[in-house]
Length: 232
Image 1 (tube, helix red, strand yellow):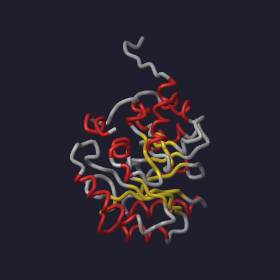
Image 2 (image 1 turned 180 degrees about the vertical axis):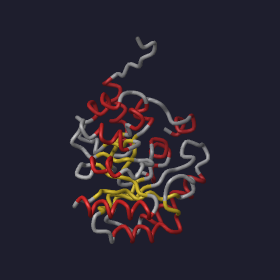
Image 3 (image 1 turned 45 degrees about the vertical axis):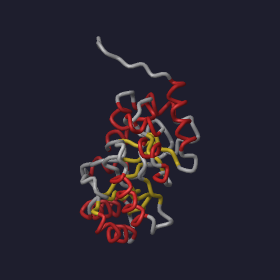
């Protein structure tokens, strides 16, 4: 018998999501349900929020979660983080509404080759590293990568995105620097969706609310930081 458990108030979860619609009413809202919805239950959270017309899709951490999530909703699923180039696993999602992050050209070439083999197109999201030093094309090579991707016949570019290193901090100078770098690159592609805002930056830096807002920890009733709460 489990010694710990968590209780979710359905009405509170729905309320929290509606608050983000008020904050970013011009953006698509994609609830982040990664890592089992931050431990709250991937299945339970998706089933609740799937009924809200303002939930445009759901974001997960890896392929395994994507394949779980796609069974729970007809809305698109976006994978946010690293995934292994596992042909058997990728075959399972080739014809489903799941988009994948790409952050190096080897991955682009692999997915293009596999898409050709499967007679399918993979939906992808290009991640740009604007200074966080995590996954992503370096800013100086990002435009070249975007142009390369758009020439592939078996890849369909859904969005361009980045991640902020210090969006929860009181000092927003580095986040603004990252935002400007990202905007300078992604802003040139008007027909491609762009997103950089998480819960913290959506609240404290409204200018980061672009085509998509990733509604993460704030969805579950937690402030990303005390600094974010003071600005909220």
